[in-house]
Amino acid sequence: MSLPKIDRKAFIKELEQEIEDIDKSLPESQEYRRYILNNKQGECPHCGHKKYVKYGIDKGSQRYKCKSCKRNFTEYTGTWMAGLHKKDKIDHYFKLMSEEKSLDKIKEILGINKKTAFDWRHKILSSLSDIDKRDFTGITESDETFFLQSEKGKRVEGRKPRKRGGASQKKGVNQDHIAVIVTQDRKKELDLTVATKGRLKKIDLEKAIGNRLSQETVLCSDSHVSYKGFAIDHNIEHHPLRSYIKQRVKNGIYHIQHVNSTHNKIKKWIDNRFWGVSTKYLQQYLNWYRTKEMLKDSREITKEFAKQTAQDIKAYQKFKEIPINYHLLISSQ
Image (cartoon, rainbow, N blue to C red; front, side, top):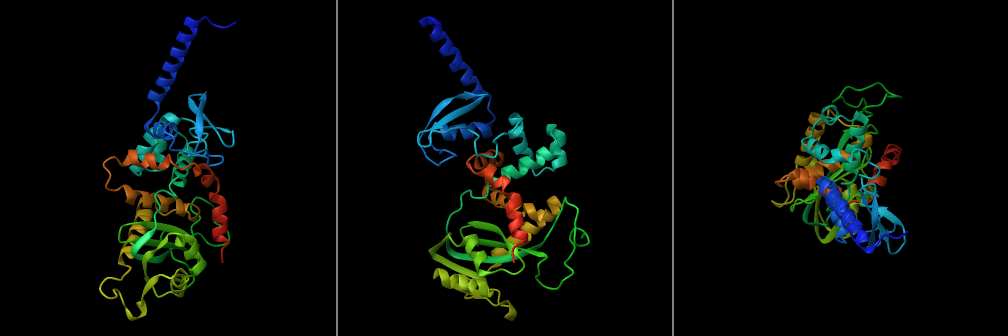
């Protein structure tokens, strides 16, 4: 039986008030995600179409319907928050994470399982992989650094366990080493990419930064042949530094001292803050370091950090692909 008109108006008003109350109770990070979608700045996580309409509320989450593929989604679909329980703890988690508290400390303060704290960390870090990546312009430095392959958190098989800070039993760069390409221009655009096992090849550079060069890029690197071939392929100006004659600076302006400094900072941060990290999750921590550098001058680092993570609608998928990417890395070469 239909409600009288006056009762329908009262019901609608009550429903609107409930929705408003839900919005007010949202933590900032979730509220920002809803803000993106409600202001038509988002897209369908299923097909990427930018036209969608609100489609009701589901257990406190705003639902939407895509005008293209006709599929429904919520404000969290595809993001790192998809399927997450205890969403009321997200903002507090962000604060502790931005303060770089240990997982044990986070577990104790928030009253959550350590595995939950660990998964949240890497879901968040998965959402940072493609944030604000622009082309490199002007003088751009690029150089690789190496981390020993680590199975931290897992029983080691096939070799003797190494103590933290140990060294490979083989001489020189070998299959025990993981190459990380660090690239940055003088405008502070930064890229950190876990590339391969052992020696770097031209294809590794192509995958890492091949689509981020412009005609204004002037590449500075060491004299490794991979960089020379890479520069030729992209028809960009290249200035190699010859370490074998102790060449540090060329023509007074071409050098790779900024990336070498970044190498040292990253390694100190990872070793001192986390006592080393597993190779499986190394790219995640590099995403974190890059975001830290982007936000270091912000007055509201925690809030900005949370906003950055709310934008990636492929974050949950990237999190699930971490084991696959690790397998591809260790099977490379």
